[in-house]
Length: 238
Length: 188
Image 1 (cartoon, rainbow over the protein chains, first blue to last red):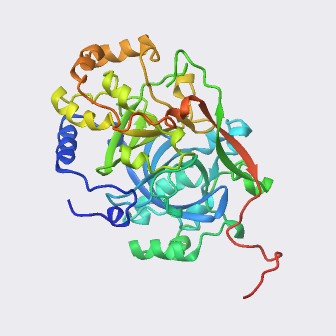
Image 2 (tube, rainbow over the protein chains, first blue to last red):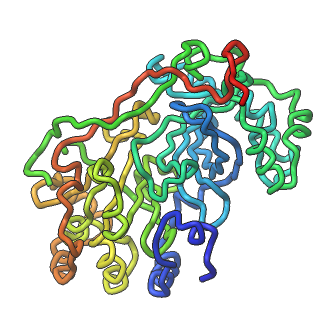
Image 3 (cartoon, helix red, strand yellow):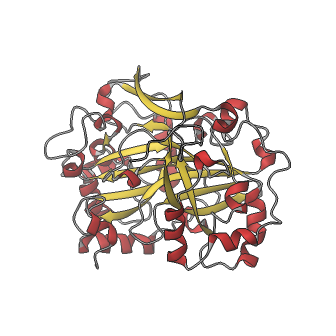
């Protein structure tokens, strides 16, 4: 198997996939239905920021499954090639559903309107006209994104507690670094600025819920820690 | 440990030493994506900082007891893969607590642990899986008796070092992407 970028960079460290493993995988693929992962119907490329440090921003690749009109679930990777590392999961709900959540839950979610209106979120290789109906839906939605592998800070393995991620907004405190956007634009031969110009008609939710993007109204960011606790046991562990 | 979930893993190799898995609550088209898992060889596990190791769990018992299986894959083929998995460690995070009836993924991510000995798994959960997939864990246990766990034995810090782990949320001062105009800057 040709070595991939990940193997070259040693993230994660390890030997190339053996012939035995490749054959096992091929065999399993033929025998098993793998139904849930075949429901992924969209690839979206966008940017996210760490809630505990907005200066840390990442390009993300969302592989999206629409469950129903109000709910999507995404497997998030740090690139769109076969060596892409699974860095987290994002859930997306309509504004209708979001408004029913308790405030303590809402503060973990972010809005999508700016991200989409600004052209930061794109569906690579999909013409804008074709993507537009979905973009109209997504512009009104809210997302909850947990990142479990901080490859942007050089972690060779997924270390640490999950991080809550936030979406780009027009505030200067969370501006996405131009060099990140340029790198993405060059890869797909697009212009985020031009795309932004063509999305002026896109509307966000009727009323942007003030509990989403918690930091904007409350000037506090959210971090997750892992602590010891007493485990409820049925028997000896481990 | 009193809250237990059946989990369907869809895994791929990043390389021979590491796999990454999406976890669903059932193997169907409308399955809910409830979490993910990373699986590493013992060699990679031992490179983790000691503060990180408790978030990872061993797979030896899950594999040798028969409860972990590859639906639809014939035993001899399945065992060729599982004898490797028995020596690995995993880090599993769940985001959607379907077992408590949540209709949406609410709350904080949960660091999950794995079964590590007899007597932990609810018999009703086990019987339900056995009957739906027409498998017998007892029979598989006998077939897998030859398998071995990690060469250095199960690391004492793995499996939450026997203590429970919980995630907590903290409010902190924001670290902005760009300094706002009002903050004086030093030009070097």
